[in-house]
Image (tube, rainbow, N blue to C red; front, side, top):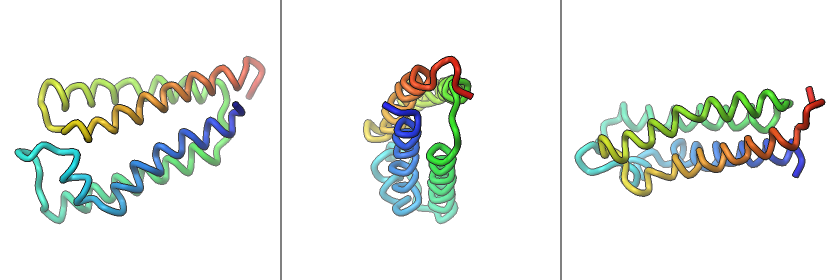
Length: 126
Protein backbone atom coordinates (compact mmCIF):
# COMPACT_ATOMS: atom_id res chain seq x y z
CA UNK A 1 0.00 0.00 0.00
CA UNK A 2 1.32 3.46 -0.86
CA UNK A 3 1.99 6.20 1.67
CA UNK A 4 -0.63 8.40 -0.01
CA UNK A 5 -3.30 5.69 0.24
CA UNK A 6 -2.47 5.18 3.93
CA UNK A 7 -2.81 8.92 4.49
CA UNK A 8 -6.23 8.90 2.81
CA UNK A 9 -7.30 6.02 5.04
CA UNK A 10 -6.15 7.99 8.10
CA UNK A 11 -8.09 10.98 6.84
CA UNK A 12 -11.20 8.86 6.31
CA UNK A 13 -11.40 8.11 10.04
CA UNK A 14 -11.47 11.85 10.73
CA UNK A 15 -13.94 12.50 7.91
CA UNK A 16 -16.31 9.77 9.08
CA UNK A 17 -16.36 10.40 12.83
CA UNK A 18 -15.79 14.16 12.56
CA UNK A 19 -18.44 14.47 9.90
CA UNK A 20 -20.91 12.69 12.13
CA UNK A 21 -20.19 15.15 14.97
CA UNK A 22 -20.48 18.10 12.61
CA UNK A 23 -23.69 17.05 10.86
CA UNK A 24 -25.59 15.44 13.74
CA UNK A 25 -24.22 16.34 17.17
CA UNK A 26 -27.49 15.42 18.87
CA UNK A 27 -27.26 11.83 17.59
CA UNK A 28 -23.64 11.66 18.74
CA UNK A 29 -24.76 12.75 22.20
CA UNK A 30 -27.69 10.30 22.25
CA UNK A 31 -25.72 7.29 21.03
CA UNK A 32 -22.28 7.71 22.60
CA UNK A 33 -22.88 9.24 26.04
CA UNK A 34 -24.47 7.47 29.02
CA UNK A 35 -27.90 8.89 29.99
CA UNK A 36 -26.63 10.38 33.25
CA UNK A 37 -24.18 12.58 31.32
CA UNK A 38 -26.33 13.54 28.31
CA UNK A 39 -27.50 17.06 27.68
CA UNK A 40 -29.25 18.84 24.89
CA UNK A 41 -27.88 22.22 25.91
CA UNK A 42 -27.06 24.30 22.83
CA UNK A 43 -23.49 24.93 24.02
CA UNK A 44 -22.84 21.18 24.16
CA UNK A 45 -24.23 20.75 20.63
CA UNK A 46 -22.09 23.64 19.36
CA UNK A 47 -19.01 22.13 21.06
CA UNK A 48 -19.67 18.71 19.48
CA UNK A 49 -20.14 20.32 16.08
CA UNK A 50 -16.95 22.34 16.48
CA UNK A 51 -15.10 19.19 17.54
CA UNK A 52 -16.32 17.55 14.35
CA UNK A 53 -15.25 20.52 12.24
CA UNK A 54 -11.76 20.39 13.75
CA UNK A 55 -11.60 16.65 13.07
CA UNK A 56 -12.50 17.37 9.44
CA UNK A 57 -9.62 19.87 9.25
CA UNK A 58 -7.28 17.24 10.74
CA UNK A 59 -8.50 14.88 8.02
CA UNK A 60 -7.62 17.43 5.36
CA UNK A 61 -4.11 17.75 6.79
CA UNK A 62 -3.74 13.96 6.91
CA UNK A 63 -4.95 13.63 3.32
CA UNK A 64 -2.97 16.43 1.69
CA UNK A 65 0.29 16.71 3.64
CA UNK A 66 3.46 14.86 2.69
CA UNK A 67 3.99 12.25 5.39
CA UNK A 68 7.44 10.88 6.12
CA UNK A 69 8.44 7.98 8.27
CA UNK A 70 8.91 10.41 11.15
CA UNK A 71 5.40 11.84 10.61
CA UNK A 72 3.83 8.40 10.95
CA UNK A 73 5.91 7.71 14.06
CA UNK A 74 4.97 11.02 15.70
CA UNK A 75 1.32 10.59 14.73
CA UNK A 76 1.27 7.10 16.25
CA UNK A 77 2.89 8.29 19.46
CA UNK A 78 0.44 11.19 19.58
CA UNK A 79 -2.46 8.74 19.51
CA UNK A 80 -1.38 6.92 22.67
CA UNK A 81 -2.95 9.33 25.21
CA UNK A 82 -6.30 8.90 23.46
CA UNK A 83 -6.30 5.23 24.46
CA UNK A 84 -5.99 6.29 28.11
CA UNK A 85 -8.84 8.77 27.59
CA UNK A 86 -11.10 6.13 26.03
CA UNK A 87 -10.24 3.59 28.73
CA UNK A 88 -10.89 6.08 31.52
CA UNK A 89 -14.26 7.25 30.26
CA UNK A 90 -15.52 3.76 29.49
CA UNK A 91 -14.17 1.66 32.36
CA UNK A 92 -13.20 3.99 35.23
CA UNK A 93 -15.73 6.81 34.89
CA UNK A 94 -18.32 5.30 32.53
CA UNK A 95 -19.36 8.29 30.44
CA UNK A 96 -19.22 6.53 27.07
CA UNK A 97 -21.66 3.91 25.83
CA UNK A 98 -20.44 0.98 23.77
CA UNK A 99 -21.13 3.06 20.65
CA UNK A 100 -18.94 5.77 22.17
CA UNK A 101 -16.05 3.35 21.91
CA UNK A 102 -16.09 3.96 18.16
CA UNK A 103 -13.49 6.56 19.09
CA UNK A 104 -11.22 3.80 20.38
CA UNK A 105 -11.88 1.74 17.25
CA UNK A 106 -10.89 4.72 15.11
CA UNK A 107 -7.74 5.16 17.17
CA UNK A 108 -6.80 1.48 16.76
CA UNK A 109 -7.32 1.78 13.01
CA UNK A 110 -5.21 4.93 12.85
CA UNK A 111 -2.45 3.40 14.97
CA UNK A 112 -2.34 0.38 12.67
CA UNK A 113 -2.21 2.71 9.66
CA UNK A 114 0.67 4.59 11.27
CA UNK A 115 2.61 1.32 11.55
CA UNK A 116 1.84 0.52 7.91
CA UNK A 117 2.78 4.06 6.86
CA UNK A 118 6.02 3.96 8.83
CA UNK A 119 6.96 0.76 7.03
CA UNK A 120 5.81 1.97 3.60
CA UNK A 121 7.68 5.28 3.92
CA UNK A 122 10.96 3.39 4.27
CA UNK A 123 14.17 4.65 5.84
CA UNK A 124 15.10 6.96 2.93
CA UNK A 125 11.79 8.83 2.67
CA UNK A 126 11.83 12.52 3.66
